[in-house]
Length: 324
Image (cartoon, rainbow, N blue to C red; front, top):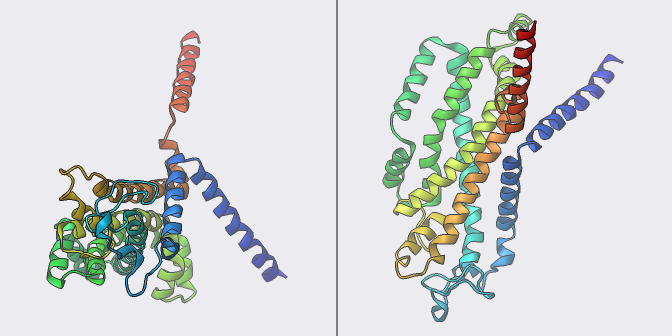
């Protein structure tokens, strides 16, 4: 009977927690706007083949038409065409797939390795912590974009190489966050209770320590998506990432800059807008998740109206105290 009651209560408790998180998340209008933009970009990437279907052996987004090169936005080509007559909107739609894939893979690689290293260093301490964290400090001493340029330059251009290059630079952030969280959790009573009944270290970390560290990991992952997409676009822009004719936003931006002074502004404007939009959206989502997953932070984010009300209350208390 007790087991039946527990199984009935746990889903309701979990549902209630998710509902409370979503309720707090909705109070941040920028975070909701970011979520809407990311959702629209995901739909754009999912239906890219419908927007620009393949034509024989040539993909629709790579179809060249020299009679329509460098056309400005119109009803037929809403974002215009590039220097070889390819539709820019079609290429942006397919480029959304690459950007989202790069962000997802980089975050997955960085999270997997970083969480593992951070958990080991924080839980065991001692010589393990010294070795791992000194390695992390070495990586942090070099800017992420420089590490990515060095690795991408050594491995050569290509999608997989770009994801490896950017993913290595994402590891230290997760490792340091998880280490700090594990240090604050590992000596608490519920961990000691689980250890006293015979739980091994792997079970303690997996079942009791890491679940209490998920909030900052989720926030770091959402903001890491923005950083990964921006780094991949930067590598393609300087020529060490994805190469033409791949429809990647950074490569499109690089290809269009040569025609900017000639007045063909649309070739750089639209890829730049989409890069800025997706980076902004993931950053806003991360900011909203930070406030939603940690309600204690809400006290520090006063609105102007609330701030004025608090000042008025304090002034009223001061007047009452003076009269007394």
